[in-house]
Image 1 (cartoon, one colour):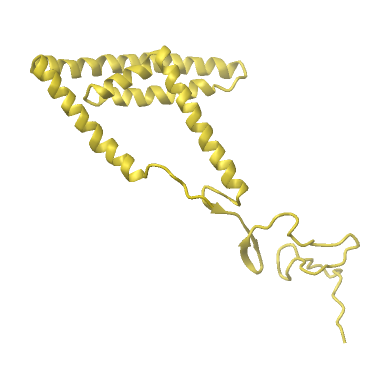
Image 2: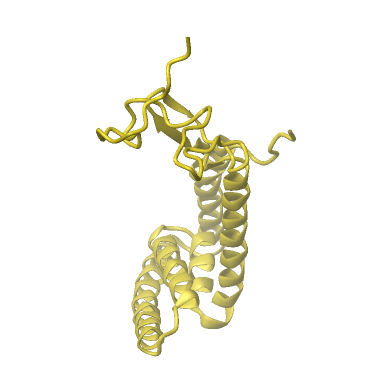
Length: 197
């Protein structure tokens, strides 16, 4: 079986929580050196206020669009993705910085949000494909299915591997339901196995 290749989660978190703030600080220092401290502070505050207003406006539009699609009997897939993108963009705009503000504003403009929506669809399609592949290999999300019987849990078998529970004529076959299980016939009219001498 081929091993999964990709960037480890620890590296991603390191880049997110250390790399991005470091880049933001360097950009703000560069803007301060080009302009002044007052301009840099105003840039951060004004971008946050404008971003919050835009996020609220675009969020209401997407909410109303989703309601119209639901009333029309259509599942609002694009509207749901847009809502997630706008939520992420609003959080980025509330974070002080220039790079996060640029990315945040790009999620609030409908023309550029289409790009992020496409990336979101590709991401979710990959997740669904991995889930189906994992289910076909005997589990979902790393968990395997088990059949529970009187003998305890055992890995789930395919339909061809499972032994028949009961034959057509009502007789028991080898490998049938264990005695004492919920599916065992406990009635007084149950056919008792003949004792061999």
